[in-house]
Image (cartoon, rainbow, N blue to C red):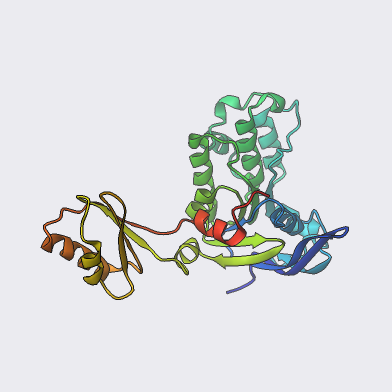
Length: 306
């Protein structure tokens, strides 16, 4: 498979008596999007900062494109893009000037004007950074992270505070990066974003990995699926359950709202519709529901506020 784009093994990072990262391991495959999820204080930002070379690990090994982010910083920095949530632009510099300046340092940059257009910043190209809105600064920060055509890019909360149009434009840029073979390491609190963009997800809590897998694996694993439909209230749900495979439950949580719980497959779907047809019942709004990534995240990390 070659060298991983990002490889973290048994990472430990302490701040005084506080252990922020406690033996964490993760891997990002070249040309994929890895979402790193966790509640506030879980250690995800520290982990990413170690990968970016901004912090030294206390134990464990970190390699980005096969290089040590601290010892090999000079060789690595031209190959890595970093989007900081705090921005990083010069207050008096104009948005377009900032982007063109960064592009001038790169051997094979992306076209700055194309990036401005794609992220809806063309009209703001002549605006000083200090006068940009929060959303415009966020999108400019993304453009600055990718304009040098990096091989790996770290995105910290890339759509925080963005409106739906800007969020979708950002997602399109991330999709284009992946299509071009760029590895994206994404931290986000927006579960729909992770579910939509990520090839793999790592959930961390208290400085440790508590789950990893594709979004489909995480939302499917260990969870009963649900089949819901609407019909006239008062159906005989015991008779319905008896007509279904063993271990499948049927109930009417609310009048006229029916719930079938268990592994949903074509045979179960056929059994439900056959029973409804035999009983002269018209099943409306029949749909299959699975746990969302947010459900999995809350199950793994708890629902209490941090």
